[in-house]
Amino acid sequence: MPFHLTYPKVVALGGGTGLSSLLRGLKHFPVDISAIVTVADDGGSSGILNRELKVPPPGDIRNVLVALSEAEGIFRDLLQYRFQSDEGGHYLDGHSLGNLLIVAMFSLTHGNFVEAVENIGKVLNIKGRVFPACPHATVLHAQLQDGRVVKGESQLAFQGSRIQRVFFDQDVHAEPQAVKAIENADVIVLGPGSVFTSVLPNLLLPEIAAAINANTRAEKVYICNLMTEHGETDGMTAAQHVQAILDHGIDRISKVILNEDNLPSDVLGRYAAEDAQPVINDFDVLQRMGVEAISAHIANLSDGTARHDPIKLAAALYGIALGSV
Image 1: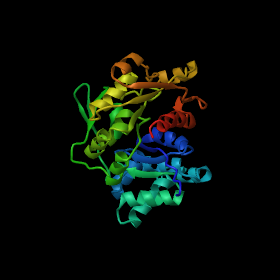
Image 2: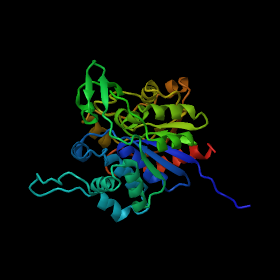
Image 3: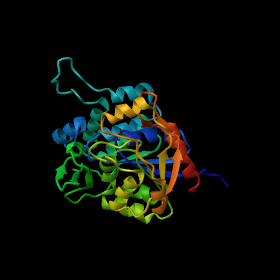
């Protein structure tokens, strides 16, 4: 009788640079990866392509595809290449080659964004699968603590008031293949990344939230940010990050991965100038919430910034995945 090796099924939801950083490390571990990526970005190249060509914003998808590619190196540099003319004002200025390739594939698939992403994944020989959370672009709204309502993901961090909740003002539905991946997952990962603009937009899709809540056997892991983000999570502790997720329709987070590296003073000073501080690990509050806190050395400070180290973070997550099957 043939022996079939079964890898833990890990589904990671998010967007921005945080999700791609995790996946860049996770692809080196024996796990079955599915990435579910927000399509709520309305800034920069992605926003322009969405408005002018009616394609869902490709930027976060591009970053995730490149992170999972088995041919990163020069291919990564090529797809991340951003056009910029000497004098400025050229119609290609600000667009990355990867975004334009996704747009071209979107046209070749007659407007099927999910198929376009899958085809680019095959071209890049990615490990795992990538799904947009929704097959169409979504427009994120936020209610701020001062009561104002702001429209557009790119506008949320510049309002001078912390975000209270995010929402969509019209019916949106999840990509069915993304929902199926969640239903079959052994580990469901939220983050890392901006909690209100990268993580929560995925959870606002009712089918995704319902699938996460219905999968009671899966470990549900939140990877907490290293630093707060001005205009989004000012002063928020690790437990408050988790509470924001619970407040947006998720019944339970079983584990949270926290950074235990001390950050050097020069890095702290650089972030303090941007009104950002290290996220406080309030272990006692997390314990009262029924969340297991896993503290690990997961920071990468090599370039003078505080970011998650892809391999260290993936190793911490892999330890959880091994115990889930």
